[in-house]
Image 1 (tube, helix red, strand yellow):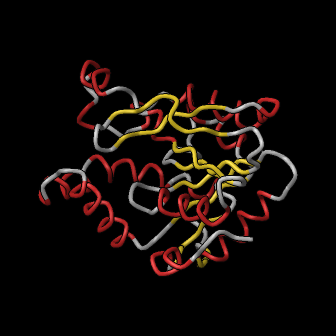
Image 2 (cartoon, rainbow, N blue to C red):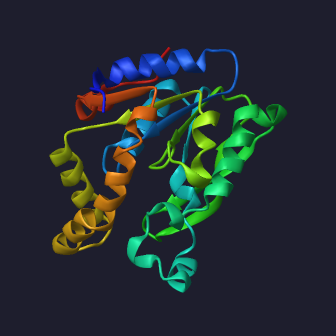
Amino acid sequence: MRQPRTCTLAQLIDRAATLAASGSRTLLGITGAPGVGKSTLASALALALGPERAVVVPMDGFHLDQRVLDWWGRADRKGAPDTFDADGFVALLSRLRVGEDGHTVWAPRFDRDLEQPIAGAIEVPGAVPLVIVEGNYLLFDGPWRTVAHLLTESWFLAPPESLRQERLVARHVRHGRSPEAARAWALGPDQANADAIAATASRADHIVTLIDIDDEKRHLGPLR
């Protein structure tokens, strides 16, 4: 894997602002293993640019329903590539890329408290120039292979592995797992997915190690 670029949040906001000013609907993909900070970065970019210029659409809205995963016997590895509606995700990105002739498109989101996807929860107005797409499998093969071609630009986040795992365990604890169960999941199903995702890093336009996001995102207002 080629060496990551070390970037500040401000530098990435500047790049996102440039993409938003390109004059046409642009899809920025932010990918990487579980716990790398995809959602945090995507939210910080959207906050800085403002809702008129950027909307976040997470891949997690395409998790299959928990009852489906239970029926198929896949609940014990929820988050693996075959526990998502990949074709539905590709179809949505295709609509978002063309801008639907200025009409609003509605995207699903994933509720971590319910552990279920919620349909029609994210409004993407036709006039918004930048859609920030974040998720684990943006650069994968199989049913995901079209995703990379729909993205205008892709960033693969690569923080230190120890930090990634620490964040991931903390996230699982916040959402109700015991510390022991959180670590077991992070080092079990999550790690298996992380290893597969790491193999896709070379397909990204940029591999990024982000610094200072926690300090900077507290002080950034909308970019003018």
